[in-house]
Amino acid sequence: MKVLLLNTDRFYDAKGGTEKVLCNMANAMTDRGHQVEILFCENKIGTVPFELSNLVKLTNVGCGLSKKLTFFQRLRRLFILNKKNRHAYDASLLDPKFSERIKPALIKSNPDVIVCFQIAATRILKSYVYPNCPIVTMFHFNPDYLLEKSFDKTLYALEKCEYVQVLLKSYINITKRYINTDNVVYIPNVVPQFNSICSYDSKKIINVGRFSKRQKRQHLLIEAFNKIVSEYPDWSVEFWGEADEGEKYYRYCKELVNKYKLNDKIIFCGTTNNIYEELKGASVFVFPSAYEGFPLALTEAMSIGLPSIGFKNCPAVNELIKDSSNGILCDEKVEDLADSMRRVMSNRKLREEYGINAKKDMVKYAPDNIWNMWEALLVKTVKAYKEK
Image (cartoon, rainbow, N blue to C red):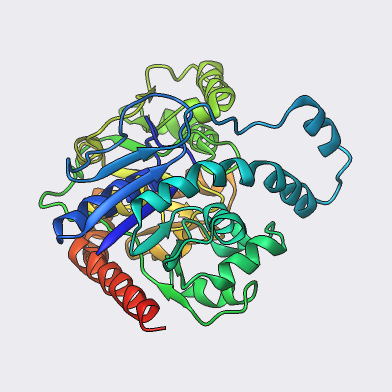
């Protein structure tokens, strides 16, 4: 089976969850004997973000492709007040550009099935390219976040693709509120299974994620730690994640650390290809996100046995963290976050109890389990399409 993975967003040098899933899926399907090609639209030269098999074919059709609107297009956009209409306007200008690059590459590739890593990729295929093979669309976020701002052409394209994959069972009914289809399937993300466990004697708190004020909200951890640092002078915080996409917010977080005179306690570490070693050296994982799909950073932390703290109103986080079992879910207030941190920082036994439960809870997401689900779906999709 020839599988084409289509990514119309960033790829080179990107260290996010979507890029990790993309590389991992390519490797897994290749290991299972399938031909895999990653087709992407990157208007720069860079390096593959995660380890990738030499057998995976990489095709970049984005060189020289402008993803920005012209000055006059942006000016006209200012007069479009409705958010969905603005998205539709943007798509009407950019989608044809993408399709002109993607279509010839798809004809040359001639895949048996396409897996779209963005809903925009599905819209482009169904509206302009019309490939002669089935399409499976991946949802990397809560469907409410993805679909509430989607316009009719996007929703129609999703209804017409063979399957839409979601990351949590609860997302199936949410998706069906927006699109009229029964072909919504639950396949969670892969969670690596670590043989060792973290150090519960460590006095280190860790956070992993790209810097994002709207979603990841690292500043809340800084604010909470500042409230209790005098009680725990031996403790420190490490931030691991990209700053490029949120450079202004990253500077704000560093200024906040300077303001509170915490430069010797809070460290900005950048990115790493071996986050396992960093997680292993911590004893608490704090994740103050506003929304998530199925957060890889959180699940990897849990898999290594880290007790985790998140907000009870954050989608996905509030299903993965089981309050007072494998971590703590708290109200979305700095004071409550600080109190939750205090609770585990002051009790090694509690850290260990929550952490061991977290590790057990991640076993069901082991790689073989998830890639078996994906392979079965793709094989079934190709077979049904050929029998039409």
